[in-house]
Image (cartoon, rainbow, N blue to C red; front, top):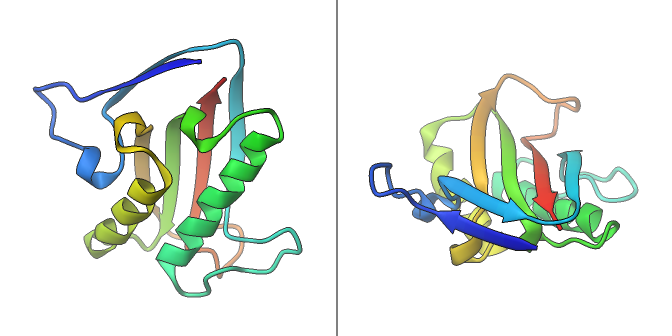
Length: 133
């Protein structure tokens, strides 16, 4: 896959927040991952009441899903992140987890949405991913 992240000079610098403003990708296969959460394979919640730990497990689960079809987190071009009861104080944790999971020169494009609730009351975050391999 050929993938490149861009930071247009006339848009705010987003890389410190863990995402690219624009991603261009060419490949043979587009992968759409369903919303992932911090459940393990036995439906055990990882990171109860801890947004950082739930994000870490959620990103790990996206990596597991992608591996099933020959991809990795490096192939992710777009993320949609849903955060329950979002407030700006959470941004530091969100950015830190994204910057741990993705190479600074290959960050995905990203939309962050604050929402009221997810499918299970203990979920703090859910993420959808689109990858190109």
